[in-house]
Length: 145
Image (cartoon, rainbow, N blue to C red):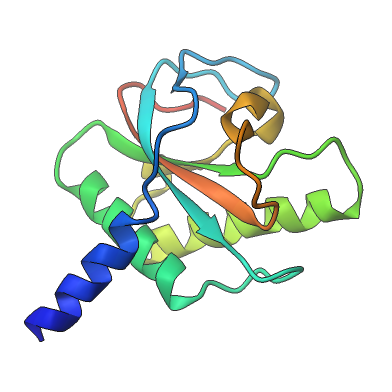
């Protein structure tokens, strides 16, 4: 059992890589917030799929556990940013699937938010994977819709 947990920890920790630009004090058409988001997980999906695999579920489980440890924490799900087209609908659906799963794990609606990808396209700078979403762990004032 201990070895299994260690392997899962190594796999999930490998998903947290050098952070993209910090998301803080953003305002856009969809939300305004003063929170600070630094640590993040890149959740990869199969091409044209919205199903969460075990690696994605493990990463989201770790992130939701972090939220529950202290008041004032929340998750911000950022869909992949694209200028438009049919793929954008899949990207938004993936973000909704992630948010719904976080709520299934016990987060309240005020503890998980889906951001407008147009509010922070710079977060995707340098990330080549197009079939993914980012999940940020945040503190402070959450988005107001």
